[in-house]
Length: 185
Length: 296
Image 1 (cartoon, rainbow over the protein chains, first blue to last red):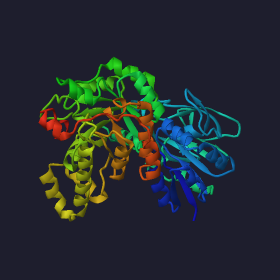
Image 2 (image 1 turned 120 degrees about the vertical axis):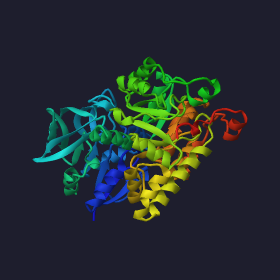
Image 3 (image 1 turned 30 degrees about the vertical axis):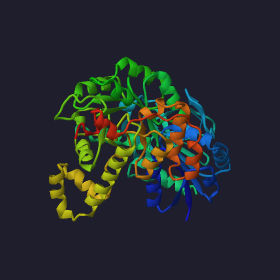
Image 4 (image 1 turned 60 degrees about the vertical axis):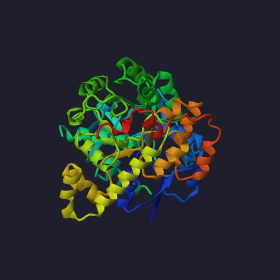
């Protein structure tokens, strides 16, 4: 059985754990630097506030070890704030892990009144998309493939072992994104 | 419910705030300090509860211009308070695209019978609750997030603790009764039947539940988290203390590491003076207001 480390500093980490357990994966929470030493087959960076998680990652000295794992090929799934933390460039903000060559814009759809539900084609399959004060991908670098678009903007991208979504697959009953991630292990 | 998908999105924003600290701020400068310290959202208001308590008189929604100044200063969600039952204050807050409205007992109630019909709004609402009955009535009215009431502006955590314990105990009780007893329960506690059923079947509220009222130290915040809160609001506790930036960051860390006494010891060191505080017995003696009793 595979063990997935779910970054549990702030935000909707339990929702990811529920989905992953439902799909038969074993999860544990990464709450401090020492948790990164546990055997791990994959990593999830959840939704929440990217400013909060970014600060805690830096304060706890976790940025280096996380980056090393991702650059070493560990499969990672980042959703919403997780996508912002993975991005190399953040418009109007600072990059945290910077392992994915994309530029993202925070709060691209505005405040909470701009949050919305939609459906989109994710690798040939129609899935529900929940956008909560969501970021958008402004541009993608070389080697990044677009897995899903909404209104002409990429909302799910992939770069090697890294998958990132601007929406929240952990908040719906559809398991497509998490199944793809688990398929990488 | 006017729009189920909007209500879902509003509950989901609260889910994203979990494990975080929402801080009261009165100026853009304080908002920036809060954001840098790791607040997951800020509550924009003209006077923090301790000062509202000291000033007395009628306390109302803040000046929209002041709120907009704070919205411009930070990138995290901005919340603001309206008076209980004052649906026009809520309409104004929606017009300036606030991220969350707190229909709050901290302000003077505008209606002594009715709360706002929150289903008539697109923006989300958080409401205070002292027990399961109050929580389910507010959710029935359309609240997409609940917090304990505590006794705001006191720096005394005892009320928040008692509200959180009452809520947990009542959720356990409702979970333990037979299926055919839920009707009578709903009748007795004056709560919507579908919500009573949800709690009976799932053993939890259908929305996120934060702790609020009197939280002043990292230890207070961790106490509320260990008692089952999804996150905390800190009102007067930060900017009424000696070193707001340091205390704010310490409380953020305490909410993440609430189960780790070593980290809690480390972040509790050298924070300077905590807010002075006033306790519930003194409030009663001084015939000051008990805000928690507003809006049942």
